Image (tube, rainbow, N blue to C red; front, side, top):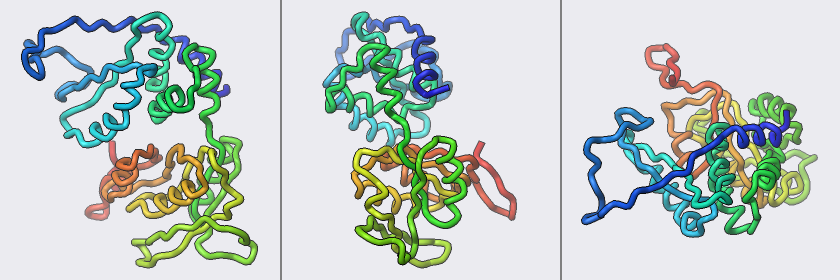
Length: 276
């Protein structure tokens, strides 16, 4: 089933009730709710952000909210609540919950960008589904050598080309190159990786795939190359992640979505422990 068909069904299946906020007298900066109300995140402070994709002020605030949310303590969680002030906004309201249910909230900022920067009129279900269908992956990028196998399987599954960065320039790698310096903590050496500029194009959505994630240096190098081409990093896929090292945190801090098949929590005592 195509992504367009899947998304269309998810969007149609979600019937949402309109959210109403009762006016409150705000003598101070906030009002204490007593007794405390139940939430979806037991044991944590829940912050609700009410927004609308069509709101220009929400679009301006969104990057600031994203940055602020990344700094919240572990006992605090941000939950977004899309609102619709009239029936014409209901499809955009359903759009957010569809993205959430499909695990595609990485597209949340892209919706604001499409409406307020690219001036796309994605206000109806049909327009939204067409826009979602265009948010696929154009190419898979990895680094030689061990990253090629999982990247190739990913590219075949998506039906898109695979491009891999070389660690050493070969005689067949001619013409302008996109390069980045990458430090290997395993080998304690720094090397230059490169991709022919003709292999990536501006505006393409690129999925980065690698076998291991530890300090994130390889991923950061590939991100640099993708950006040099004027392309966009859609996400980063990893086979095995060493979660006790800072790679994921560094990448997520920069706003990239990271998905790993296996996340190793520790290797202490010769025993492999995985993140639950």
